[in-house]
Image: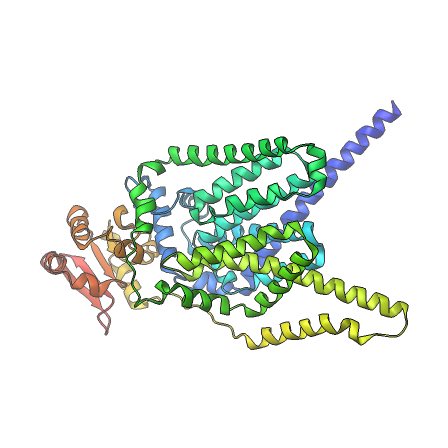
Length: 503
C-alpha cells in the first residue's frame, strides 16, 4: 500500500512538472510577443500598411466573415488556412489592424520558440540563444512578424513540424510523428512555398543516428514511419482542401503563379541581382554560417544536414523563381541563422577548450585562442560594416481616407486597387477584386475588360484608385463608363490617387 501511495505521489509530481514546463514554454512565447509589441508598438498600431498584401489578406478575411466563399466568390491565389484563421480571429477580437498583426506575431513567436528548442536539442543553450537572437534580428524579420502576411504563419507551422520530428527522434513515439505531419500539412495550407522541405525532412529522418537504428532494429520500421508521416500529411492536406473547395480552382492557385511573363524592367525579375541584394543584408550572419558548415562537415554532424540542405535548396529555387519578393527572405534567414548557431557552438567550444588547458597550465597560450578570437573579431567587424537596410511601407493619404469616411454611410461596395482603405472603414470590395495584385494583372488573369464587368455588376458607390491608377485610366472603356456614371471627388496633385462617387 505505501508503495502504491509513493507511485501515486510520483505520478502527481510528474504531472505537475509537465504542467509547469508547459506554462514555462507558454511564458517564453508570451515574452517574445510582449517584447516585439514593446519595441515596435508604434509601427504595429500606427503604420497604415506595411505591404499591399496586408490589405489583400485583411479584405479576404473580412469578406469571408461576411459569408462569401473562398475561390468560388472571393478570388484567392493562396491556400485557405490563414484567411480562415484570420477571419475568425477578427470576429473574436474586432476588425482592427492591431488584432490582425497580433495574430501574425503569435505565429512568429511560435516560430522563434521552435527554432530555439530545435537548436537547444542539437547544440545546447548558448548556441540556441545566440542563433535565436540572430534570427530575431535578421533582415526584416521583426517587420514580417507584425505584417498581416502568410509567410511567417506557414514557416511557423513548418518549424513546429520539424521540432515535433526532433522530439520523435528522442522519444520514438508515433504521436509526435503524426502531429509533425499534421502541422506540415497546415503549413502547406497557409502557403505552399514550404513544400520543398518535404524531401529534406524525410532525408533528415533517414539520416537518423545509429541509436535510433538500433532501437528500431531495421530500416523497415523507419520506412513505415516515413510512410505514416506522408500518409498523415497527404490526408490532412487533401481533406482540408476538399472541404474548402481548394482543388476546384486550380486556375487561381497554380496558373496565376506560373503564368508570369518576364519583366526585366523590374528588379524582382533579376534573380541573381535581387538574391544578392537580400543576402547582402546579413553578411555577418552568413560568415558565422560558413563556420557552422565547416563545423558540420569536419565533425560529420548529421543534425546539420537539414539546415545545410535547406539553405542550398532555397537558394537554387530562388535563383529560378520569378518574381522574387523581399518577404521570401525568411526562407534563407532561418537556415542561415541555424547554421550560424553551429558556428557559434564551435567557437564557444574552442574558447572553452583553450581556456581550460591554459588555466591548467597556469600560462595562457595565445596561439591556441588566436583562431576563435580572430573569427569573433571578423564577425563583429561585419556586424559593424553591414548597414541596416529597412524596407519602406505603403503610405496613407489622410485626405483620401477622410473622403472615404465622408461617403461611408451610403456605401455598400468599394471598387479599389488598395482594399486597405475599405478595411479601415469597415467597407467591402467586390470579392472578385479582393486581390488586385501585380502578379494577377501581370499574368493576365485580371484584365481591364473584367474590371469593367465588375463595375457594371456591382455599381460600387465609391471608386478608389491609388496603385494602378495610370493603367486603369489608360483604358478607354473603363474611363468612359466611370465618366458617365461617377463624379470625381478627389485627386492628389500627381493624379495618381483618385476617388469617384456614384452619381
